[in-house]
Image (tube, rainbow over all chains, first blue to last red; front, side, top):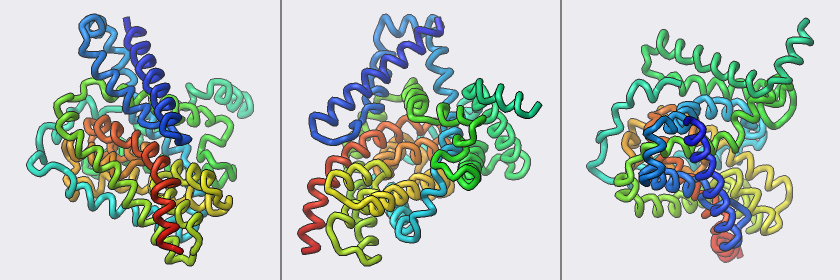
Length: 132
Length: 254
């Protein structure tokens, strides 16, 4: 049943975001701390757990894979609703601050990444995951 | 007749959004195939198209939600909003390699802390260069360079003026849009081609929307690793900026 997969996904998101909110309150910030990250971990662990694994193999995985495949379209919609004008209206300080932060962060990626793991595994994106 | 059509589109806003986005992606993949022989990824073209449309939507309506402010396209707002975005991001975790995650875990944590620190410092330094001298404004603008959520959260916590808060949001938006568009272009040069570097990348960049779109346009397989660390960044930023970092700026400026 496909709905089992969708419900599993929904449950993971709700629990994760709830825990993220609680975490934010505990450390006293007005933000969700890692809610989506916690949801992802939850999904990874649950999908390896016996009873859930059984249901997933029995068709429920389709409900998760559908949303997995909808990811890029959703990101395109997200791009189309960005406040691009707002970004440009901040003037040079906003543009330079944003740009400098991005350039420096890009430069740090190779320094922090593990040497020797390059080109391993994920390099070859499978065609089906590339399709929208 | 046009009015009837627009009424139908508005009434079925989410379905309209699916159809419109599907068409954008179809055209983008066709362009990618025909004119770049697949070198520029179809999703990179689609995301850039989305941003361009958002710009014209903003010009046309004067609103802040890009093309979603046009009434019959309001479904784009729901489809691209936080709820479905997070839902789909969690779905990408399905099939993640747990060993890769454990392997790069410590680096992920370091990358988040370093990412907040580097972006904050860059924003704060530029604020000083542009003539700001009060610790509150400098901190708020630095926080905005982290993400467009850290900026206003920090600004309102330490009492920044609304124009400085708006500036910090703008800085965060610039960052997010640059990460969306530039990641596929620089991926090769920064070794962004494996789960470990994606994890570090997400932690350093921190903007969930930027990382989500940037990695999608680079290699969809990397998305869950980058998204995982990026979702912790804003929380860490909101924790550090109005406290430790604000105090540090205060000490330096006085």
